[in-house]
Length: 410
Image 1 (cartoon, rainbow, N blue to C red):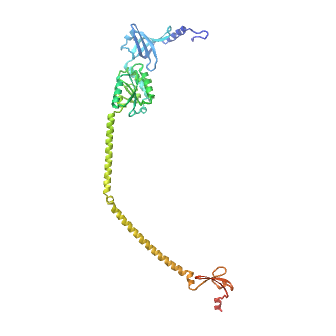
Image 2 (image 1 turned 45 degrees about the vertical axis):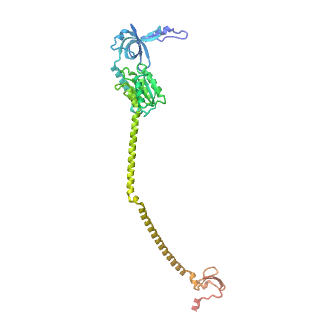
Image 3 (image 1 turned 30 degrees about the horizontal axis):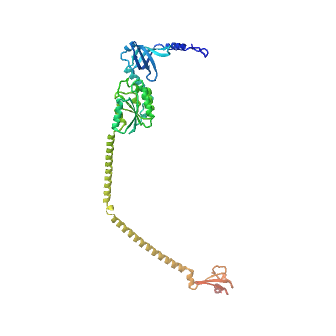
């Protein structure tokens, strides 16, 4: 039944504490999995903190020293365990804890099975697709490095990178690389470097370790954070046999921190040799092209057209002169013929012209109306007529009109 309260009749703290203890006690004994983050061994009792492996939630645990001693393997901080516990609420202090009577460390085989299950779930979401992998820059000016402070991994990456390219720069982000705080600290370091515009690539480096030591780098929250980054990420966790899930989501997986430096930073000596080799190849190619073109030019120069170009011009000049002379003779002949034709036509025109007839003493008579008089019938006595001669005109008046054909008939 719900507790009946009101502003006028509130419940005291002790009553609420007693009810919470009763409700929590109903849960009974349960099996709980978690990771030991703190362990305090005393003479008769053990106090530890049990942390959730995926979420930042923890509970206080108390148990008898005999439960720890009965474990087949030593129970240490960072170990994953399964405990048989009963939730207990101390109403006098208002605190919740777990009363444990049995602790069973999680074996490596079970851990690997759970990691494999997590890997399959993340792969089904497409977080490991090759299409999502980003290419590393050829020569990054600034490299973000997430590693333990003053660790061997830091030394391997920095020394090898600067040995290969002395001018490379680093942005360091130190984080705990083992234990229950490692995943959260590494995630914050990666996120901070990803937000830095100067950082062109991020390296997460750690030395080798056991499966339990590398568990933070298979944390689901960390994996999803790496998948969301826009800066290429290189995973250099452990050694060649170690395969945390971070290797699958990273853009490049390096077998060791040293290998990460080699993959990210080019070797200045090798690049210089490569440039020299390319220069030599380019020089040989240019030299070969020049030699081939020079050979072609020599072949062209050996041809008669180029060996004695003036002779060909002389031949062409003689042909042009001959054609010019032929064209001139033909034109003169055509002009002569045309002149003769014009003279003949002019003579014929002159022979047929009325002026020629009039020069022999003939004349053309035009009546008063201006028409040519071709018959005596067109003229009457007294009419004025125009007489056109070869050298002018004469106006005359008809005194008499005689028709010769009528006279002959008479």
